[in-house]
Image (cartoon, rainbow over all chains, first blue to last red; front, side, top):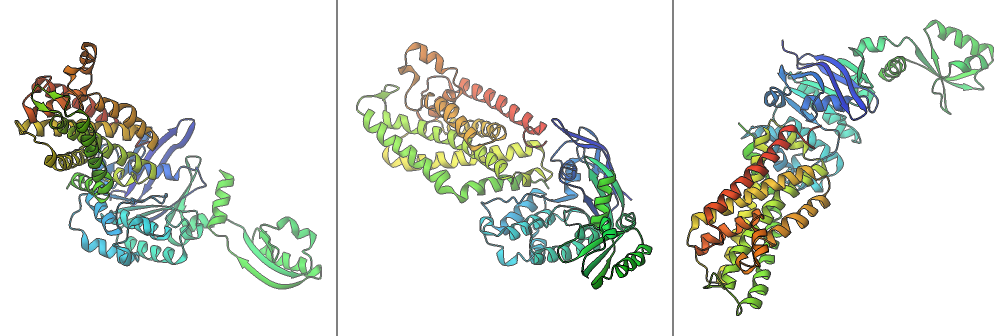
Length: 298
Length: 251
């Protein structure tokens, strides 16, 4: 089956900055894929290359088998992009904005789908409101609706939940999950790693324009071998445990342990010091730990 | 289906939603020009030997409004979209560069013609005017607004700030229209300035347009139309080349 997204050896330079340095990526149809990386890693540049907003200096990019340069019409029809910046056209209402966006893609008489998208994103009550009068969260919803208005098989969301309230975040993910179940391929970039961990089947981590990790989310989590012990003690933490501290707060000590065997030794050490444990919690590593580890190693 | 009709519709709707500013204001300006200049000049001058000055002035003011508003439409729309970032909405869809160009230029033509028609309608009760060759009127109104619409596309793509478009308008478009014979026949100028006027492409637009009303002009209308067509070809070619390469729009 044709890959939803296929990127081969893509390079892109902006003046003195090498934004992408030989990206290779293949995302099968129907996958929920995460693109993670620190600021300036090249995530948005890669999305721009896929969307035709930037031209790669070298290499090729395809969306649903269509080259983004040679066959740009078919490639762009196959792609819906939610941009990172909160942009809007102040001349139009929500409904006009969506009708116009649909028309740009050559999709006419699209009223039923536009209504459905507005319903799912809780925009129906704002349909006749001018874009200028909407709150930031509502404008973000319209951006998502604009990306979906031509029912693209591949949907790219570039940090769609940045600065968005919990209610919208949940409604948005519910809707995006449904689209994914219906067969749409989803590519997500986000700084909320718990979102990526919960949603994405596979993740690529980018650093300085290169893919430094590409694996299933579960495999990436397995790469992190340590675990965390959160303790609240009645007394001082024994001096020999202090080197294990990792992100402790005023309320609790957080100790980074190499394996479960270390838990027993740690507890024994606390007992020997005559300390009483008031609260204890064992935490598995999450995607943030995997992310930090990958970024430090690469 | 192509997205071109929607982009054209959106560009027309955009200026129509603020028609007080985009149509009403230029009509008021043109009417003020007419009242002031015709009042001052009426008893002193007859143009082409027989035409009263106010009647001579009206086609010039109409064409000046057509040209300036065609330029303002495409240039301001593009630069505003670039500055606010909503240009992305027209860069993501599968629009060809020439569809993009045609939509912006045609919308500029629609605005130019709408303002021109409004100026003509408002001034008609005050002056007696002839329509000797209506096809020439349409030909020059359409080609002239297309030239300025294309020039607006070039300026809108090139400019990164509103000030730069304003500078283009104030230091290039405005002087060339004012010095093109809107308010006078170039035959009333000294020989040097008559010759100099022939290097101003806007002169041919206004002279040819005026021929449609009075059947008299400084230059033969076919020659004027040929000059306008060449100018349209050059400016359109430049705009299309900019759009094809993605200059200042796609990185």
